[in-house]
Image: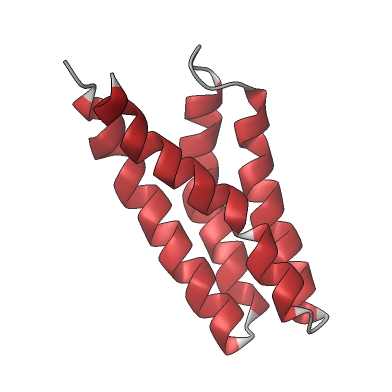
Length: 100
């Protein structure tokens, strides 16, 4: 039986943070990326304590902050690349219950 609590608790916050971060990189506004890091930080601190996911989830908010600094320095390709860990975790979170 799939764990729907991970879908309900994790997906909306991570998807909202991904949307806010994407808009921030697209507009070139680093403040949006810092807001995305604030949105997603409590979720990933909570998920980092789970046995299925480890401490490396705490690097996702750090990547969002680093993406904000990249946008501030006008390095948009680096900023888009730093959004990949959030996108990868969101995809892993969605597709893992389907494979069990």
